[in-house]
Amino acid sequence: MTSESSGQSTIIRTERGLAIAGTRITLYQLMDYIYAGYPPTLIRNQFYITDEQFNAAMSYIETNRSEVEAEYQIVLQQAEEIRQYWEERNRGLAKIAEMPPKPGQEAAWAKLQARKAKLAVSS
Image: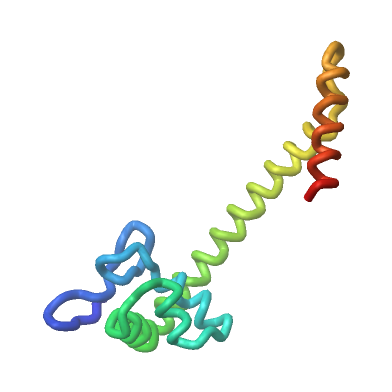
């Protein structure tokens, strides 16, 4: 399950999934950029990895394509579920923001709104 380079494993399995040894970079993060069509040089620069690390990752992905792709789809599904969860939670916060001020706080509320308007104009 690991690629060998200079006698050391370059791809390891961590609690986050398949990763480049010595980094917190998962193969799934690289795949996001690969599928988006980014050139290899830009991907290497984005993650600050060496040519050797990038080549080992690409080699591992190609050699174990079906396994890595299956895990990548699970990662994408989990990310979507997390995004939906937080989107729903944030909708609740938006409802709170739309509520009128509590009785007795109208003056403070008006002052806050005036300050926000002033900041918006100066921006």
